[in-house]
Image (cartoon, rainbow over all chains, first blue to last red; front, side):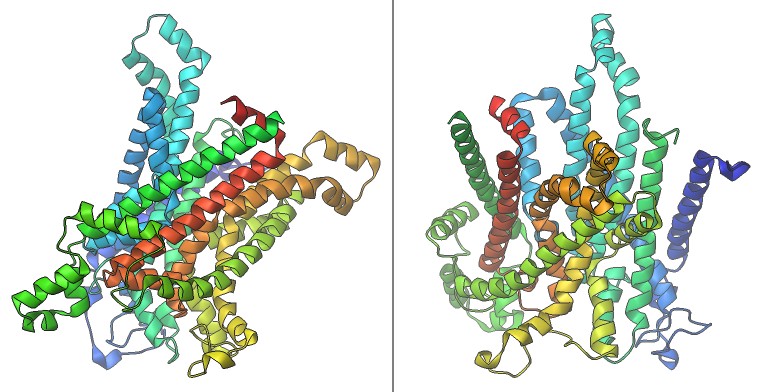
Length: 277
Length: 333
């Protein structure tokens, strides 16, 4: 038996969660402050390999890679959050109407889900981004429009199950209004699932944003997005400038893992099945 | 007899659904491309060349490419041709799309097939190991690997492998599908394989996460079942337990999942082909997207959608054939 403050798994998890959120928030805020610094070019310090002054080295225009990476990540996180929220909203809407209305609405929503899942994500993102003329708007819309199907399916199944569950049927029989049932019985059950689903969309959203930017369909090339940094680094790999690719990518992976682990922890904390583990 | 009939009916229904979805995919793709603010004329002829042309010439070119017709009419004529096997002319390559796609598809299939098989074998093995030794260091390691690899963008892993094997060790080529400056006839299978190793490795590594975690869950369920307990009580070794009881039970769901994961592997190949300058479908898609090459992009989307739906259909039918419980419940619908 472990004792003390961290002996409790729940407390330990909440502690980890707080640290992760602080770290991610830190990157965001730091990135916001670095808007100008990320554009500074200084040819007297170009192509430096990592050293104490420039931890991530500098590129061929003498830009500090650490600053660019942090700035790029904070951009990615913002885009990720924005598109994940929109995406989760779409999922909530479609999932609920398809469960509540049933019949042809259900069929239609399922058809749309199959359609979105039928085109490989990257390809659909690429198409939407082209249709909207690239740029931030295209990326956010693209990611938002491609990531909702799995959450929508989850919500649909959940609502259908809830609708049929005894306690909600009884509440109806007892003469409680629809609004009351939704407020008191449905939302408390759905909200945790929805929040976890939302958090778990982030990592995918960030990865897809980076990917589509990497392919040249996302953010424009003046912005220090991680995808841009990595696609630029490709040209300098052969000449041995490995730090241009390794560190920004490593940080991207770190951020995505943090989001993912936070989501999983949140799921364990919120879902009744594992809450007492 | 009744079962055969219901199965045929089910397969037919799914096939029809697939055709409908393909139609929807083509419409969505077409109108997304049409909504693009990029003028295909300007993107492919070039601003300067377009500027020197007279108004008449521009109109002629527009009529030749059919971009002066209303979009719906354009779509209908495209669909008519496509059904007859005519995919139009690629604006980028100035060749019939069929020949461009045929060449790219061959390269891509080579890549995708091996990546699909390797990621399947690797994923199932890792998943079974993790599930059978749940809670051990091995299990934790495999789980950690899955989370890490799910968080790793495929193109970054490709860059790392390229850096390591191509630039530092110099043992593998850094790009393309065949040696540079070699006659097509001289290219051996070995050459092609050497050029495909890194892309295949990248795709196999990144593709395992989902199937591993799924197989692990399944294996845990199996290990907790009564028949496994009984097998253990009879004195079977762990290997015997796996081989006699576990393997068959875990294979089907894993295989199904693997068929359904074609979409992801294809998505990954778009990125990986870009890094390795591998001339496949993914690279064609990116080039077509950047150059507003509508006929080519349409064909790529349709073919990839065909693979995805085909994979899903196979997974569905596979379940249907093998698992009698599902057969019954679907027949009741």
